[in-house]
Amino acid sequence: MSDLVINQKIRPDISRPQWDQRTYLGRVRHFFSLTNPLTLLSSEERQERCRQIVTDYRKGKVSPLLTVDELWDAKVLYDSTYHPDTGEKMFFLGRMSAQMPANMLINGMLLSLYRTFPGVVFSHFINQSFNAVVNYTNRSGSVKASDERLLLSYCCATGGAMSAALALNMMFKNRNSVAARLVPFAAVALANAINIPMVRSNEVTEGMELRDENGELVGRSRQMAILSIAQVTLSRIGMAMPDMVTTPIIMNRITRTTFYRTHPWMRFTEYPIQTMFAGMALLFTTPMCCALFPQKTAIEIKVGIAAAQTTQSVSIGWSQCGGAVPLAIERLKNNGFVANFDFEYFVEYTECDLSSTVRAAIKFTKELKVDLIIGPPCAQALREMTVIANIYETPVLGWGFVSQSDLSDTSRFPYLATVLPTSLSLGYVAAELLELFNWHKVALVYYKNELNYCASVIEDVETAFNDPSGWPIQIVLKEEVTPDANGTVDGVLNTIKERARDQDIEL
Image (cartoon, rainbow, N blue to C red; front, side, top):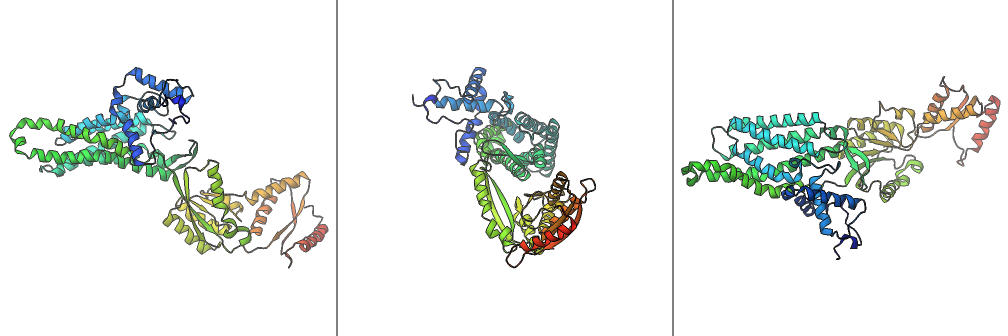
């Protein structure tokens, strides 16, 4: 009785496949069970019973007589029969378990009817119609293909396959060669290269969903969408390659034998023979090619960091601040926010120098193709970095002395985000504070530094104070100061205090 589910210390997690999806063998075993054509023969009663077992188990209801094997068998039939998102029963031709028998008949037809115009048109029409049924049945997700997009991809793939097949047939019209028999494979490969990218083209424009280990949406990625589409296209072509390449070679040898030439009725055996070979190959290539690439994988994010090693080293120097980056990532991972993301860092010391910043920007975007750029921590250098990053649509995260108001202009810097509010916002907050106390006269006193940061902040504050739609404020004193030799500002503040009294300054 140890195999009963209720006796298990750790109950099976049916939200994940039964076998380890990190290994190719585990993925192959998973898809062998999912594409098993025998599940098409299951009765309505068994399908409903398996659906009830899975539904109850997810709700925490477990029959005392349910075994672990029965639970996994029910899960396999459920996954093969019901849509993973809607829970509705799928049309039987659109199920994964129908891939082998349906493609077996279709591939046999493609390999047998390649010689004539009607045969080419009919066989490719049937093939692409089946693909359209599969795409429609299995469409899911928030970025799913519309009916119009599916129809357009169906028409383009069908037209592309027919055009390729007819054109290649013209090339090999007078040749009884293996090349002529390989025309159907070339046409099918071209159709897949058209169909899949078109069906999923909205994922490229809007981005493929990225989720954490709990299934929560954390973002979208167009690069991952392109990679995923390429992988699916390759696996589809690889699925068809063994039978659509080896079968023509075998049939070409058979047709050259004396027995075949002396028995005209052997011509009628081409379709059943090629269909049989296709079925034998697809029984293995379907799950093996589906398993070529993991369905879920950790995302590697490349981060380029434009650091300052000597410039303002105490406040923004990499030696003081660099260690915060891996610590922050580790904290996020421990809290489950970026558990499925691996980070790789590339550091370039730009020292807020414009020429060094431009070189680093080109290296990050063009050579390394990073996913995110952090810094540089100085406003003018950040502007140069962002201009180049805009060309490659690479996000830039600004930090340090980068609170200038123009950096928040999304029309100029659409891919820039800063960790600090703008100094213009600081000015408006200060203006509201003055209004609260009914103050009108102010003195603006600021440090002089090598990056001219304080002066740029004061300019934004002054802009806010001079806004005619706001509280009337008079700036009666604006002065740049330098700390004394001891590094304090007491003397400066005392001087400003005396001068402020002369001007009746309130702040």
